[in-house]
Figure 1: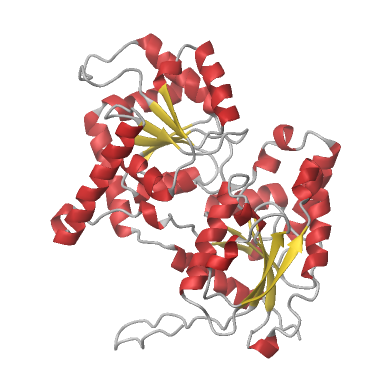
Figure 2: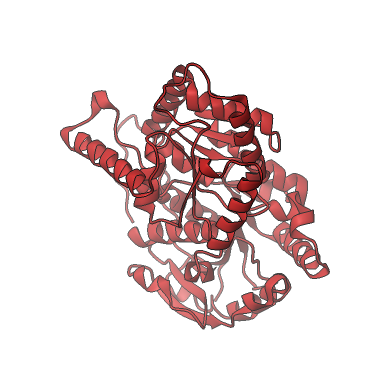
Length: 438
């Protein structure tokens, strides 16, 4: 991986670091529905590594023995070994306690003679919830979730889960580097987990390529105009396929205790009771229509029951988990993306909505205020009145919506961060903390 020399008067970009041996738990890629956020992160990172291989870089991948290996598609990665692990997920919460020991044993010897193969050293990179107990390697952790400590009543209800989360917290404190996506999450990690400031690394995440925004109209080329028209056609096709009205809101977050969907239902109920705004055009439905994407059959049944209790079932539409291009088309065509939450350490749906030029209504928790900024409306969690007001504004106040959409589009046009940037900054962390292991 080479870079052109800087021109006179320009500041040269730092040279890419020499590659290291990376031991990586890739099991979430085998079951993306179980941990979609972790799988998405690993997929984006490994695709970026694969697209731009680094001299001396190699990977030892840990995978489940009972599932197909999805990492074979990364044909440019130097994979020196794949170690197959037993399906510990069958232990449920007990996996939090067992997995650190299993991963430790599986990683023994994975970095042996890494430098003989040209590597500058070796690291273990843990992504998501599972952290090894001991590997003999510097530990780099990407922390995608703080819910276990922000919501202990939901995630530490049993003795086993409490022990597992305490063990995980201890391992995080001992890590050589902990990667988070925003400064706010770094502060929360210090407060909740007592991670040292000098071990935290803020590496902003990036949207998936399907969510990239087209260029501004004034600077658009004929090709980009064609892309814009194609995106509009795709959005209309997806909307019509799902029977959605022309104006709708979209939610593509999780369906668990991290989210605040009960407050969303109460907010829609309040809007229905308050009545239709006089200024709203006759052809625009009221109360707002919300598309819920990615709900499992059980999630959908539970939401439908909760919605029927407050008589807002007709305001909801559902879609299964969709391919990136289909979801991006729906987000791009939405009036706004919504993300009511009580814990969110990544804000990825908000990040990707803004990358589409779509404004966001979100709870002011975790990473969301830093990501949304002026491109949306932020409200406190668990306050249906405030959420109802924000939804009504973005749905029916055209001048306010136009201003928010313009800010989102400007952000999308100017912030062109990609997974290649994430990969470059992650490699620098590897080089910084990696050690020679012969």
